Image 1 (cartoon, rainbow, N blue to C red):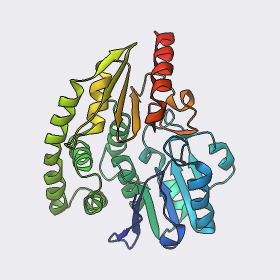
Image 2: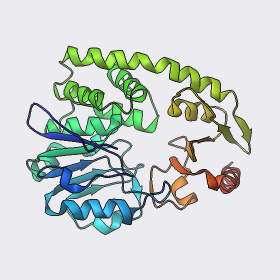
Image 3: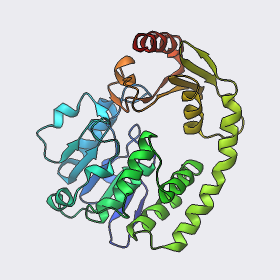
Image 4: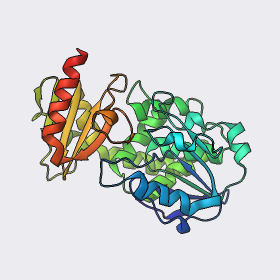
Length: 304
């Protein structure tokens, strides 16, 4: 998580956040719009009450808008607050498509755009700065394809996705992506850095393929313990698992990453009582391994 801020040419400041570890609201300047930040779930040592509500209350009247498309049982609490534009993942596969010129105009000027640090979040942030206009034709569809892992994104999003996955902790790269998009892709010097980062993912993908060879499939659930000393791309590893079974489970660093196809109809949030998140990709503590494998096997069997 980071709340470090960088300024765009428009004077708007950017902050890159994650739902589970939100910063102290006082570190964000002026009126703030929050994009693609889901309400915290109960699965990763965080909680809505412990993380999300303190952040919302801390911003107070400075919260200009909150736009998000991750399922959460507490969305209903904000149904009558016009600052909150919330949907489910099924309603909107990507966050940028929710940001319209009309909504941006209604919200008015903001000082800080706080967004999730993945491609979907960065595309949402750039679109907000551009007044609700796509940074390039098809950008919304690209963000949806990347965030749902359904369909093929275009060449720009494909390279940005690879770059961000290769250097996912690199804030400078995220800033370059924002600047490139805000410039409506007319910033070749930023693209050079994005392209350079994108090339770094190849060894991560190769390591993911090696780990995937250890997948064990039982009851249409693919399970693997990563046990990798070398870095790997977890998204790729989960996708490789889904090629072998309906659901993929990766155990690593004290947690279980669980993923199913976006159109599978599975709701992992409800299945594991997490409260919120993306219905087809969740993370839970590894202490729940036996429960996870049992519930998945039963649920998948019932749907066959």
